[in-house]
Amino acid sequence: MKRSKMMEFGVGLFVLAGILGMVFLGLRVSGISLGVPQDTFTLQANFANIGGLKSGSRVAMAGVTIGRVSDVALDTEWLDARVTMELDEDLEGKISRDSTASILTSGLLGEQYVGLSVGGDPEMLEEGDTIRDTQQALVLEQLIQQFVSNMTND
Amino acid sequence: MMRPIASLGRSTLDALSALGRAAMFLAQSAVGIPSREGWHLWLRQMHFIGVMSLAIVLVSGLFIGMVLGLQGYTILVGFGAEDALGQMVALSLLRELAPVVAALLFAGRAGSALTAEIGLMKATEQLTSMEMIGVDPLRRIVAPRLWAGFISMPLLTVGFSVVGIWGGYLVGVQWLGVFDGSYWSNMQSSVAFVDDILNGMLKSVVFGLVVTWIAVFQGYDLIPTSEGISRATTRTVVYSSLAVLGLDFVLTALMFGELG
Image (cartoon, rainbow over all chains, first blue to last red; front, top):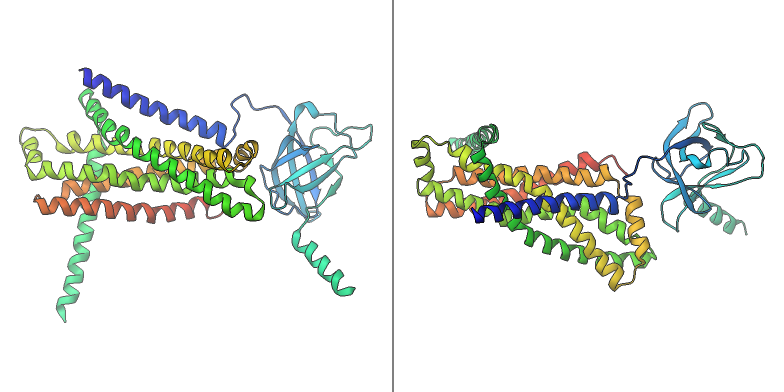
């Protein structure tokens, strides 16, 4: 009986350790947050070229993450990329209408993200609005091509 | 002229009938509601297969994590990208190394023992005696082992990943001086819970099923002599390693093939 209890305890501990490990992987390694999903508001922006941006990429303002990209699709009317972003609700009505969205890279080879920089317009962007002023992603190949053609012209 | 073709045919038929027996075997032993008695049998096997395998799996996980940290660092530092170490360690562990290496260790540690144990039961005619007194050996001997292996494998894989990531942290951050914050934050921004962690777990569930199935079936189906037992034990380790590596490729192609 005693042996069986010890065994039960061991197996229980094993299963518990597995569950705790899973929680660790979820929280610490993949970084999902437990609390209720934050309320968000949606903004959209059209870019000529999004480079490596994908759904789930972060959206930052002044380097601070304020939301993430929820969808990337081709705008069939303008034939450019339509990016939908979900931002913290606190910011609703605080981002001015002439703000700029640009696609930036963290580090030289890092992930691409959307950087928002605020303008000075007194009118603010609301739920579902589109940011007009956008800057496309820096594509390394184009940059090198430009550089090489400048070199040969000299 | 006839003979080579006939022998090809014979070995094909043998292989097919073994496959059929193995499938019937799995279906017969895995179904059925375990009784209170069955629960105790399962618990005993969980202890032997799962808890006792924990030490080797955790120690291997630690070393593999540390090696990944060291190798990853020396490669990444050449690009000035050593901040991406956490991401590299976590992704390679979660997606590939933890399920595969844990399954290989599991085949060597628990699978071979299962085959030898059941094989010896068969050789000493314990299985036949059970049938004679009206106890179904599939339900009493095989089912608890199958379920225990099936459930232990994902738990062992979680342990492997956690310890491996910690090992990478020890080497990368504590020893080589990668910045602590970038180790974790790069990891968190690149690891997706469903795509990476759950897919890795799914792999380990499949591997757990396949390895225990092969081990138990080899034990049950062997020729009951000492030579038969030794051959079956070898076959368990060889077949399950091959099955794990082959299935890993198939599963990876299905899960991650369209990514990137």
